[in-house]
Image (cartoon, rainbow, N blue to C red; front, side, top):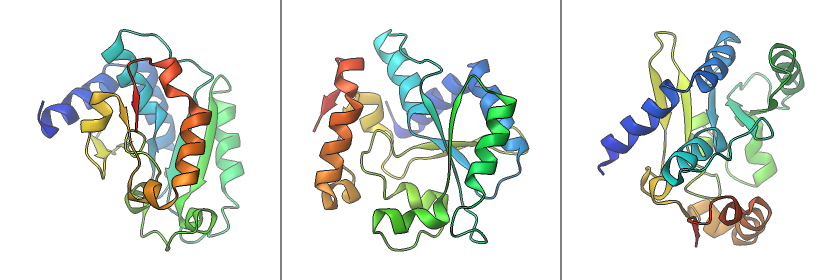
Length: 185
């Protein structure tokens, strides 16, 4: 399957999932700068579809990324999470201002949300989606979608550089237990 076909299939999966679209519409309504929802929000849905599993649950957190250079300490994160929890208390929200995350990760400053995703540790997670004002979806996938569609977890360049953190994360996440077809590299 070509990269464009993968992109179309993933976005179609999200577009036809009313629960996913409701989450995207809710986050869009906040008017956050350079926002996207990433990681398991996309990976879990696709891997469930590819394997015929039904592992997605409200226990999966929703990783909301945004880039607000005016709040480099991330003071607004808790307020954003509180607003989202008030609107959807059935979901677990994690809002992170990518303008500060480079400090936590020991990386050079990120230029924006898409740049920050390049520093995530594994290729199958380094993806995100944003619902634009015109209802079009934008996909961020700096390492493409091949690994995601192949159920492969491999380190990104940042994951190679921070190999111990990559290995620890893969162990804790245990994706191979949730999706036995997943291959960890």
